[in-house]
Length: 155
Length: 379
Ligand code: SF4
Ligand code: SF4
Ligand code: FES
Image: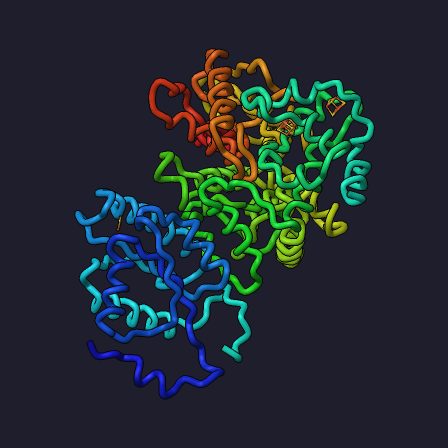
């Protein structure tokens, strides 16, 4: 698994924008998928904090909005593929919740690309790394969130 | 402790006679025997204030002012709750927000000066909005309610905003609507987050004053209360008048032409519109001027109206639902087919209970005052 960060790493200075991303990953698939990525030594961007939830269906708009309120530049919600959810229909619920989240984020005037819903299974370590790299790239291109009050330098 | 004593004094709590009328009348105490406003006062007076601040029930009070209405010595109980909550917030205490706190997060986010919201999507082609003018329509949280509640509860909160503008247009007013209006901060105020309210207030007042508006109209009693009373109380004088849409309608009924509307309705007085702002007559006048509309009063109405069961998106629980079910049954018992409110939040809370499954289901339609008035406007 080739990593795309090498080019960026060279350029990074202290002044440059490094996104803060929160990733909610469900215990049974996505969190394990991130583990798989680790066990297989797949390198990917480190600019995210992962929060384990029991199921992606539990990630209501409140979680995502709180992360954004506290200054996250992007929020990723990740669960099992359809049919694989440990709680059978949890990820269908996640889709419903995420639609609301997206609508609220749009009304708040934030770019809807700052939030993303993905499905990553426990075996897909490579896919986890791809998702993360792509999302980090996307958020870097968007720039800091208007709610990110962190001073620019010193990161 | 000194702090608590000062708060007790400020809100006249030392005058308490321990008569217990507040507990007897409180809608929360009716269904939750563990909660008692009299005990909460006594706790502050005689016992440890720390216990009071860490008490989960501190966040249950609806600040509906029904108890103060009955209190013989006018103890300002809801203000006392707000002050204790402010102190509790400083000590890191917090209640159980409903919907995981989604709406409270949104309120706090809109206090961020850099945020450019995208909240005017509800303005359709047929609505006439001015860019500068005497009258400003303060929309409130309706666009967010639309995103969050419309699917689950099968109703369009933004229709309240659209119909408000429709009525104003009919009166020849093209209201200004702020593109980046902030939350009014009502809920944060009653939950003791006073600094946040001040931030929001400053941002809103600046924008309203820049628009040159002399009169602010809202269709939400909470926004009306905050703009009219709470901002001046916290931030000094404001240079504009504030009115709830029902006052505007009542003032101008002669200029509105209505068609026949065959409906049987009853009216839920929102706490903020009634007990806080003293607006009881105007919504009734507005509704009764519609021909064909028959209006019945509930057993508890006007000054004695019972709250819709939840406020500030906090501590919604079985007690709240019991209050709501009781209220809906009371409305049903009048013979009315539709319960009309003048507050979008009342409607959301009551709708939540009408959407519940059998056997608790109460069969009654819900609507907002402006929706009814707009649907009765003659073409
Ligand atoms: S009604 Fe007033 S005087 Fe009576 S117990 Fe309650 S607060 Fe005290
Ligand atoms: S303000 Fe309302 S909810 Fe709070 S104690 Fe008084 S009657 Fe009860
Ligand atoms: S457990 Fe993974 S989405 Fe439900």
